[in-house]
Image (cartoon, rainbow, N blue to C red):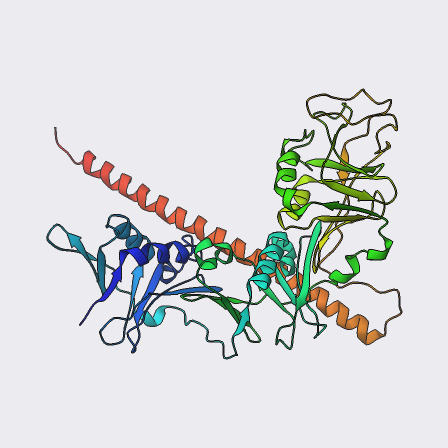
Length: 472
């Protein structure tokens, strides 16, 4: 039997990518393994999975030999690879891993698990859709704005909205800020929610050529030149995100930033004083007399430090608003260099051509959020004079979007109300399923720990009996 030869130079990044989907805490031993197979055409592929997601990497060049597949423990393969040189190779066959050892080959035995126990990789029978760089960038930006809250599972992904066939949207939100991008037209009949996963943001996968996407009724596949990621879709109805977008015509104040100076502005924002770094990370935006200013302070009871921003153009009525600097920095990193404001407590709209981010503002309860009119701009290291009544600490506003179906002011028929109730029940059942899955995993860990403790106790008891039987 001709073994499968794996070059270390390709195996190391392959294991790094597979490790992002392999769950070391899984209770199924087969999920701790990598499936290594050689096809009839000689191509060698490595696959890892956690049951919900599958990652496959194909080596650069085909090799000679008949079709073959073998399962190798991920940890064991990783350890051997770390101890090998970049230009070396290892050889894998059922039950054995061979590697260079001085002038000969060393061997390490592997516990044999039949390959038919490994989960079957889904095959999506659909035409591949090319994702150009602009669309892929929008998908990444939407992923960074999606929720990570397991109780709002439908928001834990990137939504491709195809309700308008002539203008598809890429959407991501966590209820506090929302990202959307249009100007795309994809050959999709239905909208889809792509689950977010750290593998999709991995630099090796993103540097491996153009992405292609395949979608069927249950799964989605994103592939590059040598990598393939397959995941179950997120089921459920995505919230009506359009109702949270403010009408652009309602914005009267606009701030336009120099695209070439955004990186400098981000560094300025990061140096601004922050009185609540562990909570909201509040920063203020002010338009006054055609000038754009940033507001910050070191402590709650201090006045706001106001710093003018050069190379910025402010138009419209004077206005001041507060938001989290995390969202402000993220919008600038995306190149959204125009800020549109309606009023002090309305959502802020950052936009640039077909991309936009809607951010919920922060508010000050019980005090006026605006500094005194006679307060002049001051540099960061020179606090201005204390105002008569300093603003109270900002508090976060109510989330702008929820996972329940949107309500309507129009009367609904009994059938429509029943359909809405089934959607809500389905979302609740999905949440309950996720909680039960987490609870099951915890119980399995507890059970395993109890068995380990019992074995250790029995070993100690056996040792004590042996000691008692000794004759002095």
